[in-house]
Amino acid sequence: MTMSQNDVQHYAVFTRSARKVVLSGTETEQEAQEAETQEIIIPRPPTFKDVHQQRVHLKQRLAIGFRLLAKYGWDEGVAGHATVRDPEYPDLFWVNRLGQHFGTIKASDLVLLDHEGNIVRGNRLVNKAAFMIHGAVHQARPDAVCAVHTHSIYGKTFSSLGRPLLPITQDACAFYDDHSVYDQFGGVVFDADESHRLVTCLGPRHKAIILQNHGLLTIGDTIEAAFWWFVAMERSCHSQLLAEAASVNGVHDLKVIPDEIARATAKDVGTSRAGFAQAMPMFDIVARENPECLL
Image (tube, rainbow, N blue to C red; front, side, top):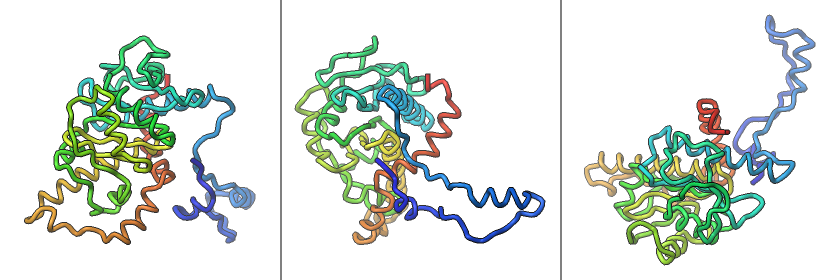
């Protein structure tokens, strides 16, 4: 994913003013001239000199993502997992090991799996459901660099309703016509038939799926986007549950954003570049608070 100058212009003010000013007491005339010629930095996903550098970066970002989930209390025993596709071997993916709390995961703790469920690197067990779900997602969706699933409280509560999110807020519009509801629950995902049905429901383009009686799963073409969609979807579930509870007639009282406006809003808040940008402040603060996760 790249972010062009036109993309940035759509989201932020970034052009340099032609007006010449000197901030009295703060800078000299020479310093003012130098400030006026500074290039304005446009945040973009990093580029890499080699695949090793890229792999290190991806594993570190995945570890930060786990710490982010832990920060919000979205861990649930041995349930929950997130994966990233290896940049050199796209048929392999990195995943958290079984029974490690999200708040302790480091880049070096991740385990590399193949699509047959074999451990390629690492010496710890992996949750079988993680392999069944994520292996199927990565096989079915070449665009899915990262996938995130855990049993967050509002996501799993909302999933029991067996229906999609409504566009009742600007943030919820990110998922307008871009998520599915898997309306079957066959127990823990331990067999190929269940994982196949799940990815079939996810479809070829949706970035998220509500797993009925289970929870949420989100994907992205960057790690940052995939984790942001999970955060945003969990919060949207929370928001809709509160709105329905506060309404006399439940869902029938909600002021749902009209389709045309929701669709247009989704083009602003639901794109991959928007997901990447939204996640950056969270990833930055989590990395500062947990520098050991990069090891």
